Length: 408
Image 1 (spheres, helix red, strand yellow):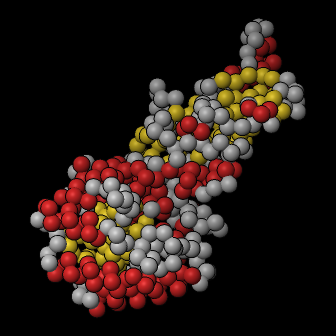
Image 2 (image 1 turned 180 degrees about the horizontal axis):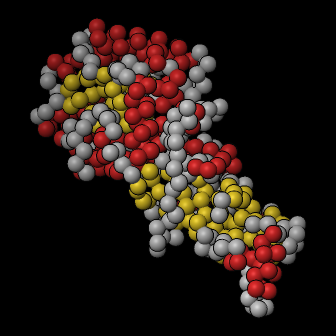
Image 3 (image 1 turned 90 degrees about the vertical axis):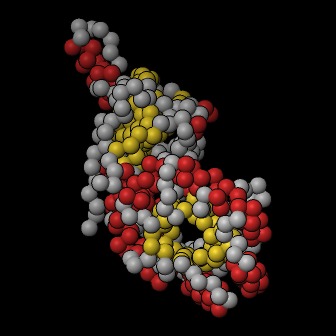
């Protein structure tokens, strides 16, 4: 059954553009995903400013909706959550030699460890005279972060030496899946086999693991055998589908971000009018153009010509190149006819077609939750030749976030 979606408010008075974040949708997405993952614990991944949705508001909503853990990539992101008063378990896993392991240990943040970080984590724990909580990461096939299989026994043994000295606690073993968004591919089975072997090595060495975790959003949705003790869900929290052949609605999820602005200008132009840099689009008949004040500085991919903009219930494709601050939609020749009628009604006073049709200043929605057939972020991803993850995470801080709803 498709989830219910509701209309999203127009931009707040005084805001020229905004990303409206529906916290109720986030809460409901989490509850739905928790049911699918049970009895495994649930980590809401709020890295990258909660995929562009706002880390602290989303984290608070996630916890209220039952998420037992929060996940970030960087220590700095985890520290932001602690500064906001969130005291649930928080884990981060992407470090450099400049990462502040001392601050992480002092703030009771769980740390992923692929190998080289171990001695730095131990040094931080020693300086604070308190043990660090560590999750050892095995590279099961993704080829990014994680300890290579050949080095895994040595890493586990080194970690257990430090645990026996009271400097760390190995509380988890984890990995990350490479092709879970293509559930039919056999590589996921290969990764699971390597993961189980790695867990066995750690447990045989004396690790008393609290959590074993490898499942991301697509695995949480499609592979129950990956759930183990905890799932790490990112994209699904925000109501987006990780699959090319299944929509959010088909997965029981509701997109949480709606991106809106207001039409900044509209004007009648003749046939042969070029539009935007390069003049790659030229009108083939007299028409009306609408100016949308969002561009690649706001995070809209420059290459996403053809992306939909909905105005007064009708979606229009972007024409011409997207610029730094703005883009253009072609409203069509029928507005010119409306303009003439409006001029007659005004006693011959000129009025642009779009003015008479209520276009100037009207809400322009680029994507949202799909209510009443509205545009979706996947359409912008398709126009840009990318994935929905990238579109929402790149919406810049020049676009204010506003929030509606909540976990209650």
